[in-house]
Length: 397
Image 1: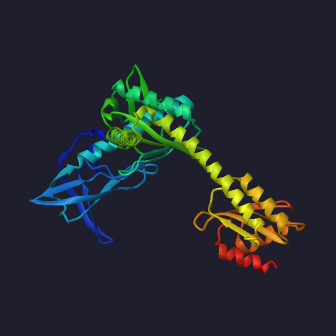
Image 2 (image 1 turned 120 degrees about the horizontal axis):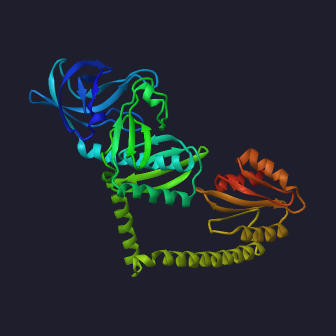
Image 3 (image 1 turned 90 degrees about the vertical axis):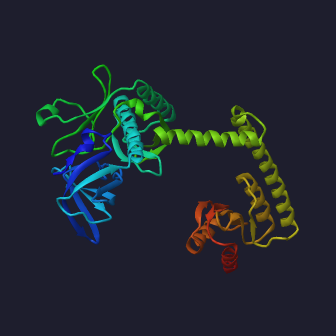
């Protein structure tokens, strides 16, 4: 079995070791090492990157794969590399440290947050993914609201400020029976526990295979950027350390750009946005009223036959007023359609002294229309072109 140095010393960036195996499989080259500082892809985290040098030759570590399952047996590791290395060769391994440290910041931050959620609400972490391009996602087994999320974020950052130790331990099977810890799976072999805190304040104890920072202060900051309902629980997206700082800087820059564009201070932007939003709603309402009047006048003038199409934004009240005018002046089924080909069309439809439920059934069958209503009027949405709707209407005659 490969000796996993990264478990005991997550800050080790170089290692001299020996290649114990080298073989090809599916046109890929794999090696095994006697000891390793390269974490393999495991537990929702990508494999470490780095280089392996020997005899003035350097190959790149493309991926690290776990052999076996921790829930069934002890595990070993193999690495995909971009060049062959003979078995028995002494090599120098060098870790891509910036990427590793970034991942350690985010993984350790996730442990703090998951531990707080578990201790505060009793929820379990049932999902975790740490990528290099997107926010870290974790899924917990219960519902959290905005106020609870904000309080959790505040508590998590207080733990960072305290600069508590983060340590690993390897309890025996007898010892672990008396230890309360979080774990997603039953582990058949040696359990590795990551403890955040000390004898005076223990924040979390969790079974974990990944490298972590040594002190909570190294995480820097934890920022929860979003949360949503997910499979009966809550999915949180978080950023820690460098990623959190870059996110905050980016948002501050954008806020300053908006403020300068309106010749105001950044503090005034929320109030300004609310004012512009209200003004926009008033203008849209006035435009809808004018559009309604114009369409009604066109109905009276005989501009429309059986169907009206408009891409102007109309409220339900506007649409009903137009429909009522339309149905009072036309025989047979008529329809008002508001929208465009990309978004689809909201509709009000029916006919004077006719059963609109019959029209609803035919629209479902031939236009895949959604919606319903009464004998007097139906409403809903349809995602076909005006030409197709007009063809359908002609078939009603």
